[in-house]
Length: 254
Picture 1 (spheres, rainbow, N blue to C red):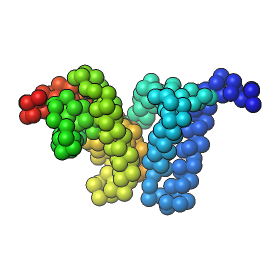
Picture 2: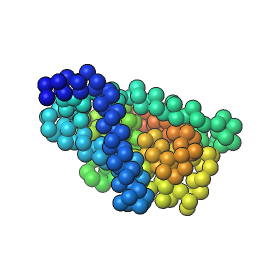
Picture 3: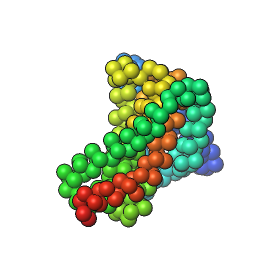
Picture 4: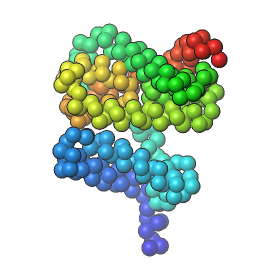
């Protein structure tokens, strides 16, 4: 028992990969055997990860989720932006340039539409819940674009940490929602080709949700959706703290 904590600590990143593999495998079994494929295994895995992060933080009193637990510190690196970006780039390498060219301006338009379609409805919802200042409204609206755009926007315009936390929660909710409902709705919206996947990725924005949803729909579409959804995060980080914020400030006057 004295050797085990040291072993887990020395091989922290390997342990993190192992835990993720086990959670993913169990989620896939639940999806196939119990839910009959109605809910993708990736969605179940994301929910399981959120639950583990919550209890990990509660148990240790820390603020980094499951990585605060002794022996699971490798999650701090595994869940970092570096590995996330590496995974997205590696996934996008499977896309075909000729198929991307067929999309033309549709991808660019979908990126802009995706930001505004997510941002302004979230601003309206935040206003309905009592938020009145432009900083809070814009931060929550940005979080609805992705859970990365929210904190970036909040930090840029000076939002409170509680508002930034709400923006992250909004982005996570959107990611899980897109993950769950992409596959069931795919045939109704014509999501069956690379061009549609690229437009869909731009409109939805959330890379994790789009990637998981397309994986449950057709794994061949994942690189195309991941490509535009990754750009959506960058576009959101540019537009939300600037143009979108000034528009909200002009409308609400605060």
